[in-house]
Image (cartoon, rainbow, N blue to C red; front, side):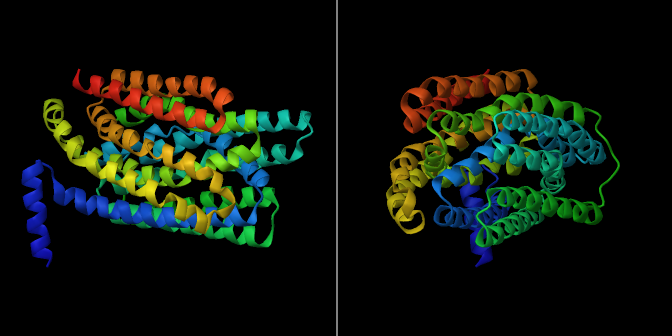
Length: 412
């Protein structure tokens, strides 16, 4: 049976001129890891939908959205830079990268303190305490995820995704248990940040002990990682701008509806987004001309799969919401339209990965700033005017324009 399957992969690989065997093996673990993590996340969302009011859940999402923006000092680009270095046999910058991420991450704590003081002056003590809690964990929570770069760079996607599932399941279980016993939003927020930080830190220590990281260094790793991090700052802000604007103009209930509208499509996008980790080691070993010649053909193979995924999602969305999110049936139409993002976002992944693999810093800088700033501008215009539908239209429009610009940069 396995031999027949291998022959099928070889045949398909020859037809499409893709390393299908590698993609199948690597993507299988990525799919299983993301699938398990997604199921855990959705189950937690079901609990929120049925146990919390819209107003309370909206406040919870607002805090996480602002905290998401404030993660930019943790230099997330070092993670991808480290994957590339590890793929070439240079792992010695791992500890320097971790120290750098935590050091710069301390600014996230400072920003949270400033926001907390602001809400104290507004006599909103709930949000003030919430941001104090976030500030205690933000320097570490995302920084320790650097351990994933070791496994991804070594193409050990099995271990990488098993660890990802372990961290997700632990965090979701802790938050779910807290939610069962209390509706105190501050305890729920504390459980969220503490559970993710401690579970990821535990896996970091296990990785250091198990992986036996070599001492060979590429001196460009941290520097290039900082460049990638700076490029991603507008994107990090843009990814949360919609939530912050909806909170500001329409309030927590509207943000709650919007959060459930984008929940499932964003989880589906996560599965495809992780293709970047899978294909970066392969792309790093190829020349620019080779990528320019072969990548467009491979995109045409992926496109029908994405279209099919969106069509299936649109058809089953009403039943999903009736069963799991009955309080949020007004989010169905928004969710169906928003699912178009799955196509345009995913098509960007191989192009950005190709530019990253070839160290195309100027092109990456341009795109990483242009696309998010365009999205922020469109959100700022359409969200106050048209609410939830305006936010969705702004995101889809920016994704389409961004994809066209990215294709131009890739061919240039």
